[in-house]
Length: 359
Ligand SMILES: *Cc1c(COP(=O)(O)O)cnc(C)c1O
Image (cartoon, rainbow, N blue to C red; front, side, top):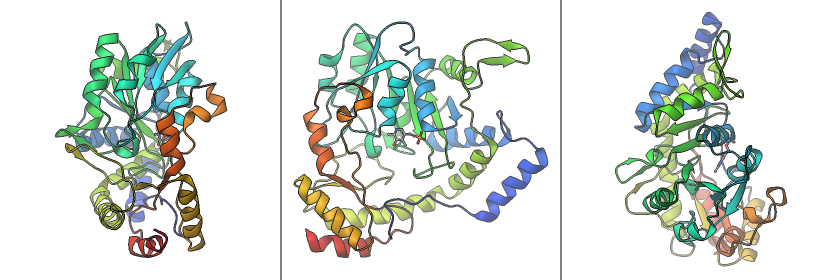
């Protein structure tokens, strides 16, 4: 079977050497040497400051909200977000007692459409949580302007946007915070893991306390906290994956361009702004209708090719998130979208030879 994605496995010898070091130091977690080294190297690679490593991408979102004071613990609170994303974007808000309020996406970029944000603002709104979906850049300038006008915090879920550049700079520089997921299936990973990039140093310092139970000294517990620390084994994996990121990106780019050349005439692809330098994390295609999407995914499966209906369903239909209004554009795109297999070493030639038979 050809999977839709495959975790990138870096050099085993190198990972073993890092693990030898962990054994020698007998230091497994609590801001160890490797977590510090990975923090420095990621800041340098990504071209950002104020990066905090955490245990996973969902906690990255939760910690970012709380460090920025976005919480429903004291009063009814809402955040405006997109229904076209992985469930964690919205469920992390709900988990923090913040009601996710959906605003519909742009039909071409599939990111939150800024024109739908203002009508969704109420006196309870404290934040906007857009997603750089599939690594595409949101309309960051328009979103920033709305946030400024209404004094709202902006937390970008940038889980898909590792290494993406926009207007000559890291896309992660936008918003009060941008969060990353380093889950095994993501482009860059630490097995499980994540990070937050804060705009302000003060917010980073607050979040550092939060991820370690609110403890600030051997005998001081300064505030309410949680455990969201990354450990040394995760950091070791990250350091190895980061060493090979250029080869990984090159291999994915080749697969991505192969698909694009073969499919862009017949299927709808994600529209991206000119000023974007993409990371080739995903290759989603939108079929003419839902029947065709489901049928072709089924036929490819018969050839041993696994695709995925990402992101289906549109999140307004997920009951645990609460009763929500229909978001027609997201619902429509979600019903017709399929993500093609993409990873380093993926056989695009074979996949395309089968796919093209059914188009
Ligand atoms: C993967 C992902 C997350 C969750 O990250 P985990 O590291 O799995 O907790 C959140 N948001 C989006 C958009 C994701 O793709």
